[in-house]
Image (cartoon, rainbow, N blue to C red; front, side, top):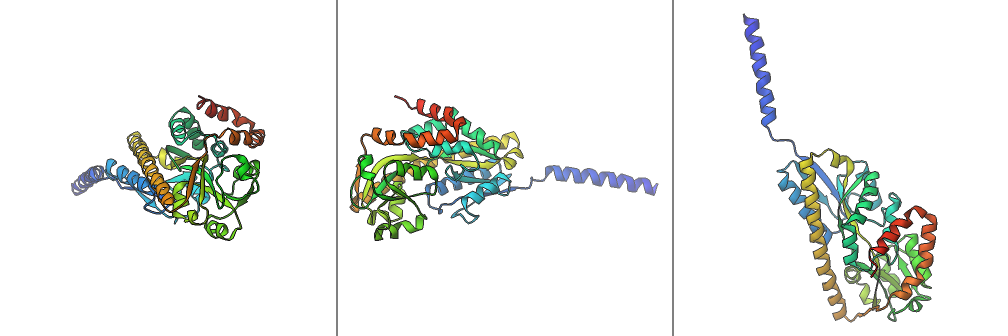
Length: 332
């Protein structure tokens, strides 16, 4: 009889434990997110909004935390960590993505997009879906697309109106063969260099110019030593808010929907903040004395880029249909 009561007690205890576990709140999934920018940067503000929305709408099932200022490592390393699941998400530029996802090299072709608006329109549609599929094959789920502005040329002693105005200039570029080829095709001397070295190099004449967007031209102080900014808009490069595929596939469908919607909301916020910041930076450098000129006719620049495109497509013939599709989608 005593053994019967003990057995019954054990059964009741097991049932009670099961009920308690079922009714207890699920353990929160702690997500780590990579970001290279400081906390006040448009991308950073949008990423923090993404994290807050996900935490709220999943009722704490997912608790993302964004680590700003690149404290979790350099971008190439962070991309690899996200691919293998060591990082859960990040805001990645497509430039460093090229060695891992070859299709994204297309996005670094100069003058690929006619405007930031065209870039957003195409990346939000079927063309963006193709890049999303390519990223997914390499372990990354692109949930939304951020902007990084339009990069243009600036230099120390004259405005740039035509390719001839670039001839002979030593121009700093990011360390990417396509950007080196772009300046060389314009008759300049491309000089890959760390961003931190550009100000002093402009000041001392080691280089004659560089290329970047208005917020960077402003915040770096480059306008102080290179007072001619020419709106060539030669590079309009999207960035992704990407989630590790391993993390994504662990989520139930309901939470996937929440995370995707939060990422899309973050992209809209980032784009609006970026546009506001870009206008403010243009006004600030103009007030400080920088001379801004808009390149009215870019046909000559586009013509000069033909060898760059030819060389690229000779190396990547499988990407030619994608390039043609992007160009055709912007044809007037």
